[in-house]
Image (cartoon, rainbow, N blue to C red; front, side, top):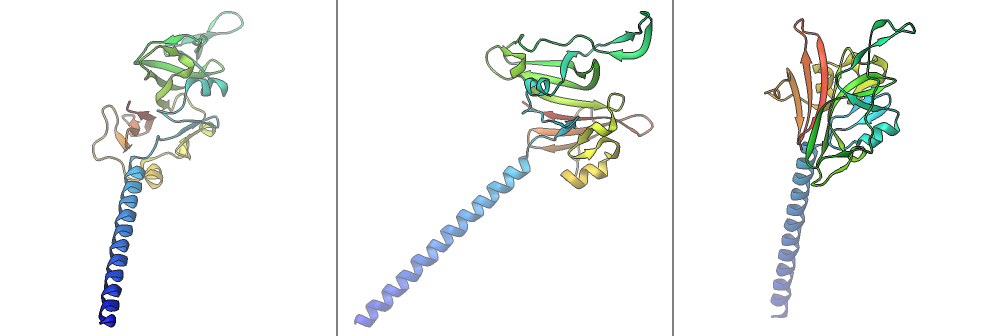
Amino acid sequence: MEQEIQEQQDIAGKGKKQKLRLVVIAALTALMMCFSACSASGGPYTVTIGGVDVKPGVTTLQELEDAGYGFANGIGMFDRDENGILTDEFIYPTVYDLSSMAEANTIYIAIALVKDKKKVADVTVVNESAKSIPLSECIIESVEIDRDDYEADKVLIEGIEIEKVSEEAVTEVVGKAAKTPSYGDDCTWKRGAYSLGFKYNEDGTLKSVSSGHMS
């Protein structure tokens, strides 16, 4: 009799251990699925300019100003030489005061990211707050690098030198592009709320690269 009771207890104990194992396996599976989903959503596509990482949806205007950059109206002007004669060099001499207030829930477009009066990128800036905040606290919503505006040794796209950027090179780093490009792009990579887009010239050469965040 005692032997039968012991055997029943052993069976019950094994059943509990088996259930515990199943619970642990289920928990691990759920954790792996969550990790996979989080990885798939990913983060912003990083554009590095002059050694400074620009991450749409994350980087603030203050961070870029601290790194020596300014923000100007996207419409520049031709420079003049010492005799006051117009040259063929395009400059952006007036930068915004980042202490100025940005309106609530507002996106600012056609802004030039400048250094030494020269444009290095076009950016879109957003104030996602429900109240007015200084421009310095606003976030870069998108950044676009045009081939006419960069110095090759200073720009990286996801760690790839801009001169070496191609669909194949980017795919090796971030995976396949989306089947359907975003509006305005000829080729787009997507992960979660973030995108990386290419535009091409008529001759097939790369015109510009943009990285953005969908608020």
